[in-house]
Image (cartoon, rainbow, N blue to C red; front, side):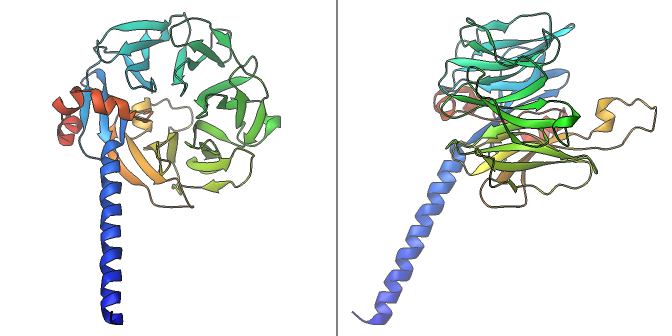
Length: 341
């Protein structure tokens, strides 16, 4: 066979392989979706959106006072979420098939930040029932409550993929490092506590392979919060976002395929003058959901949703829910209509 013909076949083969790869990536991208709770017209609703920023869908869970924090069961059937009541916040669970709901955490205190363990057995959460915020664990059926941390101020728990470890943010006083809120890990029963990174303020998330943790960190000088990644042995720290002054990244969530990290983005619209008190919605602009590549170093983020209510906590939707839920096909909402609410 002539050399020229061989080169043509090679070029065609490479083109076919690239085409097949792109089709596979696009098909996979359609499967991935994010959820968030945003308030419009006085009610907070659960929404789903593709990782491409398309196909906004509303999931009816028949509650009006939901907070932004929520957690999916690994099988996609149940959703744990924060519900506000007078003087307290509680945690409820809803069966997304039957729409039946039940109270998981009912205590006269602030209870928030539910996180469902990947093995489906436990739900971690934060409560200030004993003073400072502490991390607790409870069986998914509401039994066997266990307190995991007992001093300092601890928040933003995140499960490791094998359900054996929990990463979290902890305030341990100014003598423990700049920024005060640091990144810690502990076992699922609260043991083997270990400091991992500095200035971890607004959430953390494990990589699907369990080898790294991404977390939101802050700069005290210019009010920037960025997303950083660190190996679980404390090495190989790298920055993924490069936000400007008064820009905040928070609530990072690592995608199931390991390729992306979603996070909530906010910008400080105006700072109060000394002694002045401003409503929160005047200090901050609307929230948005951004994606950034989890591999490599600094890269430009992709915005997939904007003009949302404050304090978003984006979560990746289990593929099992997308396969079985008819509501994800029946309630397609034009993005512009949501923004007009």
